[in-house]
Image 1 (spheres, one colour):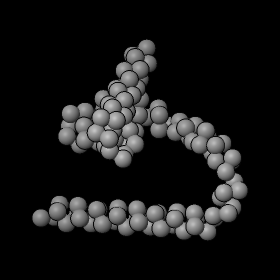
Image 2 (spheres, rainbow, N blue to C red):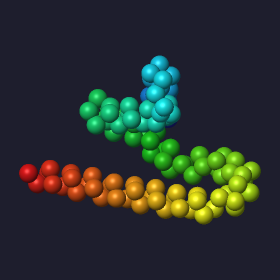
Image 3 (spheres, helix red, strand yellow):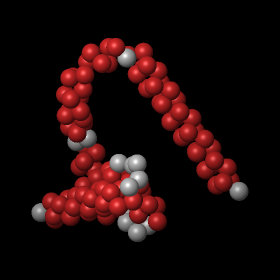
Length: 120
């Protein structure tokens, strides 16, 4: 019973951070989606220690365990656009490869930077 209560409270906390991210985006009129703003807010709260990982662990573990279910509506929605994907498959493939490589190189750069600063 306690775990269910913790799950509900932690899910409400995550939802509140998501909602606050949407409100910040709407108020500031920035070209960032509200859910991304909410993730940045959550990262800031976790990095600063205001919120500890343990305080969101039950809900976070459950949501990560079932994350594949969140992609089903997206995959079904993409089926309506198959002709578009066939028409632009070369450019889409190129964009995917370039963005994946860019993300990979960025992570490598940040990790190397963190290692250098840790060694000093």
